[in-house]
Length: 395
Image (tube, rainbow, N blue to C red):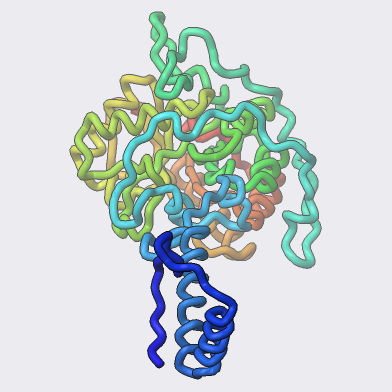
């Protein structure tokens, strides 16, 4: 007996009526077909295909790739240490530069609330030191300052030079008076990604320590306002192309050497309009970008037109330019241990004693914040003056 399966309906409008005997005969035929193992297997296969089709309709076509997962920036930054390329997930594809979408990340006015948990920042077996007395210094003027900004991409404030010549490099820098002793300055970067370490850096480090913020940080303006209220001058980080880009991708607004000058300026204007109150920019990565003459000339002239300074982590130490400039003499936390950081800070002191001044750079790791806080407490007693990074900048 042959049995066939069809997707079409089993009944037709032209089918004749069935009598009682016909129904009984049909029932016997169906039962016999069901008893056949080949027919049972075919029915099971059909049921599986129907279930799979329903699953695809509900979840999407698996041939179109992995599901799209959206993660808040705060969750990306909530890791204990922010690794290189922490914004790679923001690009559309890993093998090419993401398109510009001004306004995709809107300004958020308020920082994260809550007190700093000093115990959480201490290393195992360590008791976090209290804030040093040097923190008493008074707040810096609230930003923005009239005449120093204009609407930028997405509606954010873009720095401008005032008609009377005032600029952000002067107005937003921390005032400083040298007392004749060798000067030591330090920039702590990567802030705004981890709320806990960001608050610790702002509220427990001396106000002379310059703080550098990631442009993608959520609540960026609020963090900068809080930093300035605690006396810290602020830098904004410009993500720059490293030599291993795009495997190591600093984010969708990374400055790329292959970009046309107008595209570089357009990216810079979006980055600079993320917040206000910073006196200059600093690099985030950039080992390839800073070695390219055309790219760096475009970058430098863009900053000059906006009245900004440029402080780098040492990678651009051979670059000058017609803007206030300074380069770090050493990075203090390439090796993440308390002993190694202390050793780098001592080398920084030695450099200041020999040359009259020295500038260091570090990242907002808990161990870095803890060691810098302790180091700064005894700096004056060792015959050195703690200074803001802006005081090191020269044209």
